[in-house]
Image (cartoon, rainbow, N blue to C red; front, side):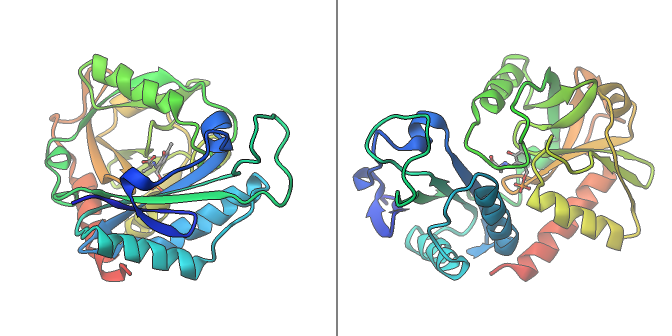
Length: 286
Ligand code: PDD
């Protein structure tokens, strides 16, 4: 089945979709994105992603080319056309193109480019990776200072994943001034007893939509939540660790820089939070 994608108002076969070579997303990484998961053919936390998208666009003085209602409709239509039961919807909005390359932003009447496509991922919820847990390495965080804006500048996170892969691991946790910021494409957590520790919000990390939901569920389940920085050494000595993201939900971490956590298998708290997250979010899916 040829994938149907959405480009600037049209639903097209992926082979026919076109964006200008002068698009500022392509030339300057001048664009923002969202990834929304699909379970049982329905969107998980669509509202959260739509709100963060507006914020990212505002922070970059970029026009929003689509209303929230229409955006939901496009998401649903793509899920339907591509028969997605479990998977992801990728959305990207760039500042568009005024037909040349220039550091100066294009004229105000330049239309943004909007692209959406689906990724079919059968078994996303019942993932074997979550049963095994992830091994992570630490790397220095050398990204720009506005990581709270979900831009498409993903070169360093990609390089981080490759460094992890080369080391025989699954992912990398980034460290700045001695403290963990986040994973290459997820937020990072450690667990000590009944307490979950994750970095406080700020410009240094992406304000994860999954993070917000998981912390809410953790508090409702009478777990303690502490939003503060932690080091790799503190993480290695913790009872458990995990990450959260729209693409992997709650993912247990079983090893950090070669040091096994606990007995080296996914922790009780991480698995419990994964189960609660999936149950609750399925109920609220749209
Ligand atoms: N990444 N931190 C970073 C750097 C991320 O790229 C992501 C998400 C998160 C988690 O955010 P959320 O819970 O809203 O997905 C944290 C997406 C999934 C991606 O790039 O594919």
